[in-house]
View 1: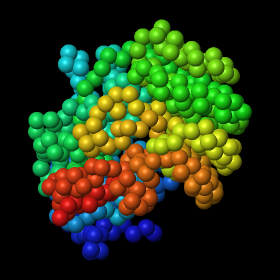
View 2: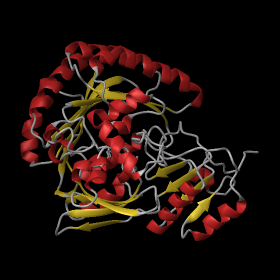
View 3: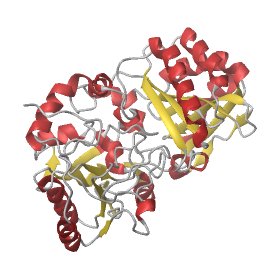
View 4: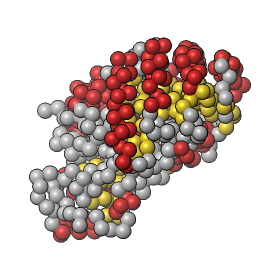
Amino acid sequence: MADTTVRTLSGAALTEEAIQGFGSKLRGELLRPGDSNYDDARKVYNGMIDKRPGLIARCVGVADVIDAVNFARNNNLVVSVRGGGHNVAGTSLCDGGLVIDLSRMNAVRVDPEHRTARAEGGATWGDLDRESQAFGLATTGGIFPTTGVGGLTQGGGIGYLNRKYGLACDNLVSADVVTADGKVVPASMSQNEDLFWALRGGGGNFGVVTSLEYRLHPVGPVLGGMLIWPLALAKEVLPFHRDWARKTPDEMRSDAVLLRNPEGEPCLAALVCWCGDIGEGERVLTPLREFRPPVVDTVASIPYKTVQDMLAPAYPPGLLQYWKSSFLRDYSNEAIGTMVDLFPSAPSPMTAIALEHVGGAISRVGAQETAYSHRGAEFSFLIFSVWTIPGETQRNIEWSRKYWDAVALYLEEGVYVNYLGEGEGEARVRAAYGVNYDRLRTVKGKYDPGNLFRSNQNIRPAG
C-alpha cells in the first residue's frame, strides 16, 4: 500500500490535525492519496510523469491560494503550482508535497471596447481563445488548447501569432501574484515593475499567478492549414522554405515539421497561419506551393481557433513524451541534410522534428526588456518524441538523445524554457534565461528568498 504520509522537507510527518485544519479552510477541495479522484487530479499532459503528491489543493479563489501558500511555507513543504498541467517536465506536480491546483480557476472576461482579456490562473488557451474569438479578437497563445495561459506566458509564450503580435508575454498587461509571504501583489508597468519584468519569461519562479490581463488584437479568419511533401523532396523543399519564410511579412508563421503521415510514411509538412488579408496571404504562399507542389494541401480561410486546435487530435493528453530543444544557429543545407537523413530511424510513428518560425515582432523587443531573452532567433528547434507503449520508453529516449547529439553543432546554447525537460542540468537552466539570469536571481531574492517556488526550471535566489 502506498505511503500516504505528508512529509516536510526535513522528513518530518505532518499531523492529521494540521492537514484537516488546512482542508477545512478551503472553499475548494483537498485531495489525498486514496481519494476517489486523486489519480485523475495528478494526471498531466505528459504521460511520462507519474508523481504522487501528498496533498492537492484544488483552489477555487485567491483566498484558497493564499491559504495554500501559507500552509506550504509554514510547514516547510515541497510545493508545486498547476495551471494547465501541460509542461513536458511535469513541474506542475511534486512527490510527497502540496500541489496548488488552479484548474478550477479558469474564468475569462473579455473587454471588447478596450481589447483586453483577463484570465484566471487556471484558464487554458482553449478557454481564452473561445471567449476572445466571440468578439473577433485574439492574442498570441499556445498551439494546444489544453495549454495553461499562466505557464506558457511566464515562459515567454511562442504561438502562431508571434511574428505579428509578439510573444504571449509581450501582450501581458498586468498580473496578480500570490508571493511566498502569502500576499497578493499586483504587477504591471506601473506597479512592482521588477516583478512584472520577471514574470515575462522567468518561468514561474516568483509566486502563484492568479490572474493575467492580456492585450487583444483583431483576428478574424486566418489562412491556415498544412502542406505536405514526401520526405524524398525534403532536402529541396526545406532550403526553399527556410529562405522563403525569412522574407515573409510578419503576418505569416510557417513551421517546417518532419513527421509521418497516417500511413506511417515519413514526410515534410509546413504548418501555415497567416493572420492578415486572405488574398494577400494567398499571394505570399504561392511561391512555396509552386516550388514543389505538395501532395496534400489543406490551407484555406478558416477560423483562428481551428488553427489553434489543429494538432490536438493527433496528440491528446496522456501520451508518453520526451523533448529536446534549442534555437537554430546554423540553418544550413548541411544541417538540413543531417536532420532529414536521421529522421526515418525514429522508433515511434508519432515522433516529429519541428522547426518553429519565430522572429518578426519578437525580434523588435530588446533582449533585456523582458525576462525572455532569445529575441534574435529566427527558428526554434524541437525534437518532439512521442510514443504510447511504456516498454518502448528507453528506446525512444535513446534515439532522441542520439538525434540531438548529431544536430547539436547547428544549435545555439539557449533554449525556450517551456521546452526544457526534467533534469537537464544547471547549465541548461541558465541557458534558458540567458543574459537575464543574474537579474532574475535578484528579483527571486526579493519575492521568494527562501525558494519556496522551486518546482520549475529553478532560479536560485540571490543572497
